[in-house]
Image (tube, rainbow, N blue to C red; front, side, top):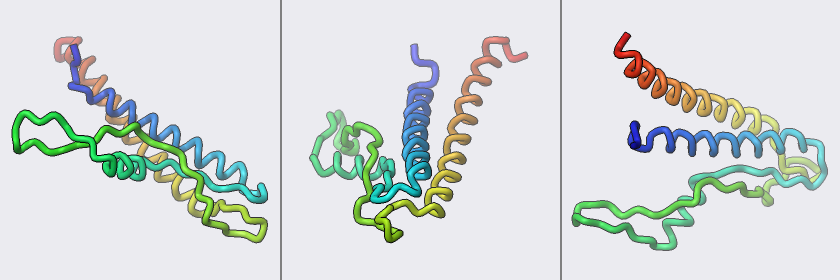
Amino acid sequence: MNIYGGTITKLEKGLDYSSAKSKAISQNIANVDTPNYKAKTVSFKEVLSNEKSKGLEAYKTNPKHLDFTHSTGSKTFDISNMRYRQDRNGVDMDKEQADLAANQIYNSALIERINGKFNTLQHVIKGGR
């Protein structure tokens, strides 16, 4: 029985994305002084647009249902066309720090939402006390 209708699973996938993005940002920051290093990024949007271009169709039981595509999730991409320094390193520290802060806020929001779901369940188990 699925108590939350898949909400926890979707939040878990969001945490997986956040973890992959954090790992890519950490690798970029760790390699800021490595010559010829290509900065990495994790993008759900690019994976989604690639999947949409494949033209997968949904099984529709009503003509008003919208089409959707199957997505494999997030993917890490090398950013090879961006070079910020003479040693051909592609890491922009200001951008990485901003991305890290945004990712931490996103991660905290997901964790707060999961905690809210579990607190609701705990409240129900205790009988509303």
